[in-house]
Structures are given as structure tokens and as C-alpha cells.
Image 1: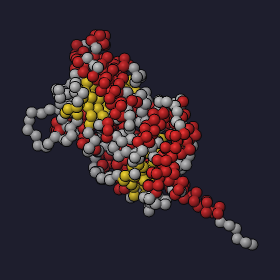
Image 2: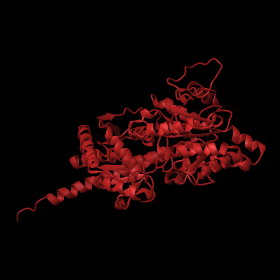
Image 3: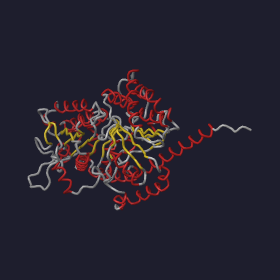
Image 4: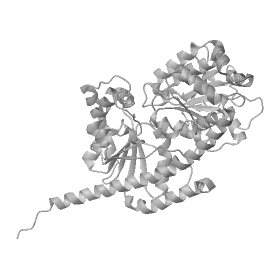
Length: 508
């Protein structure tokens, strides 16, 4: 099945330009659109991925689609929905292999399954795409769909890969050998980092770095009143006062001692506005480093660690009072990630095994996905209440959760995963935990960050500036206009060359 996502235009370019800090980026984007948009006239650009919610791609596409439309480029967003459950298990395995983990084996049966689903999806999508329409396919799940569609319709086709690893091993070689025949059918492939481009795609690849929408519900500035209201309506914070608006339904839910889930104010308030808070918000993915972050935080709270590392009584109290928030979407709500529930269950099991005095300071929270706007507001509020926003990823294609926190002037703890290393320069924009899988390393990095009051302010200012200069949606859309126009021009040139080659010489 192919689902067309209805994209609402929440913000026009004039809304962004009304903010002094965003006026120049909007002007630059409009100038590029004047140069390239007319080359996309009478065509519809198709953005194709595998889920409408959960993960960075689904976060970025609404604003990209909306802006392209406003700039005069007809654009649609299509999601492939396979009824074959094993398909997304296979593509999740491929996802892990690209990140260098998992069993480096893919069978002929896997290839047959991938082709079968891709043929089905390509057939369905071909009923909507018109000749000449550029198709942009995101990540491995719909890669085969786009390749077969291009073969059938001879359209401009681009593959945008949002994941990768900056080294090669048996796992990555297995994944790329599987995907190589499909990638070679595209006009061009696009990656987030140069380090992610496999050797066989060198010379046929371009770079577009992910970006955020600064005025989206997830990233817009919140007044103190708005912040406290969102926390209260989400049941992330309690209130004994009469309120104007009803709670969000469903609210954020927190793991309880008996294994159930209840509003996050139970069994006691989290103290988000009062205590030092370390927060990680991600999909429930084993590569996100949730387990070692939890174990490292536990290590930091141990008396012998505090005795050795707390610089003063105040510092010791700060570390002792700190809380860890591990938050993510309801696992069943992310359709293309069948491992999510398994990883989530492992984290819940680790939490249940904690000593009671540590357990009280760690909250495992699920954020509802029934409304993308409400989910985004919850994330926004949680990040803004944090003393440190962590992203302890073992591997990370880019890491927009870090970008979002940096935009909010929040100190971030990243790792040496390539996507995070690209954004966070150690001791300039935050800290990088050098060993994401090592709880002792996590403990020391968190302790240093929580204890560095003045440095955190400097890192936060630098982080905001970094995002403003490099990772806002205007830069991303500008690059899409350039790349799409080039793809259309190249396709037309190839067609002209083909026609010329096919003309028979007249009889003399």
C-alpha cells in the first residue's frame, strides 16, 4: 500500500522572515528558488519513505515539502506500507548492518523478499507518478521501489541515505553488497557525511546535511507560562491550581514498580523545574546507547564515585539530586522499527533491577504519538527543562535530537559517533563521551558536565550559533532545489542524446 501524507502548512516563509535572526536565511532561499524552481515546472517532486512518524526523516519531511510547495515546486510525500511483516524486519537488519552491527549474512530468500515487496510498491507508486516527475527515495526500505520505478518510467530518481558508518567491516560490506545493484540505477545518491559514501558510489554522490525547523512545535521558543502548561497538560509535572485547558490525552506515561505505566507524576513528581536533569529522547534503538547511559548514571550516583569525584559539598548535592529521563515514542507506534519493543523491554528490565534509591532518580517515559504536535511539544518541554541533553549513541547517522537541543541553548553530551562528532566539538558545543558503551566513561562525562556550571553556559551559546549557521531547514531546502534541478537537467540531456543517437541518417 502507498499512503500519501497530508502535509499542513503551519508556517509560511514570511513567518520565518518576521524573526530578525531568520530574515537573511529566508532571503537566500528565495534567491536560489528564483534560479532553480522554474526548471521543475509541470513536474511533481515525490518524497518517498517508510513511516510518517518517528525518526528524523519523518521529522524533516513536512517542512521540506511545505517550503518546496511555497516556492512553486509541486511536492508530494508518499509512504510505503508493506503488509509483509518480515520486510521491515529485514530492512531493520540492513539498517543495523550499515551501522556495522548484526549478523553479516543476507540470504537469497532475503533478496527475493526485498524484490517482491519492492515490485509491489513500485507498481502501486507508478499509478501516481507521472513521466518526468523526480522521485526522492529515503533510506534502504523503499530503495528498491524507486529503482524499479525509474527502470519502468525512466524518471529522475535520487536516493537519500540518512545512515552510515565511517569505517568498513563485514557487516557494512554485506549491507552494501546487497544494496549496490539497486543504488546503481539512480541518477545520484545523497548522504549526510562524506565519510558515509561507499567506494562504489564515489563520484555519483552529493551531500545534504539534515536540518531542523526553528519554529516547529518541537523547536519554537516557549515562555515560562507555556513551558509549565505543557508539562502540566502532559502529566510530566503536577499542579494543585485550577487550570484553563484539559490534560493531553493520552499523557506521557512512566514505568512503575509493578511493571505498569501511569502518568509521569506517579509515584512522585519528577522535579523537572527544580532538580538537575539529564535527558535522552530517542527511538528505542539498541544503537542509541540507552543501556550504557542508564548504567553510567547509576555509577555516577554511587557513594564511592561521589566521594572521589565531587569537588565540593555543593557539587556532591548536585550529583546526588540529579535525575535521568529516558524518553521515547510508544514502541508500537513506529511501524518500520520492529526491534523497538524488544529494546524498550530490555531498558525496562534494567530499570527494574536498579537499587530502590537509584530507581527513584531514573524515569523511563513513553511519549504518545497520536498527535505529532503534542508529541513535539512534550519533547520541546523536556529538553528545555534539562541541565544536560544526552545522546549516547553507539552509531548515529546524524542525530537531530542533538541539533534540536543545541538550538535551544542546551548543553549536550554526544559521543564519537560520526553524526554527533560532526555537530559537537568537544568542550566547544558540549562534551563528547569517548566510550559510549562504557558506563564508567558515561559517569565521568556526566559528572564533569553537571559540575561545570560556567562552561555549560558557554557551550550552550556556541551550540545555538552552530545550528543557526549550518543546520536550519532553509539551507536544506536550498540544497534540494539545486540537486533536483540538476537531476532534471541531466535526465533531459540524456533523453536528448538518446533521441539524437536513434535518428537514422537520410538516404543520399
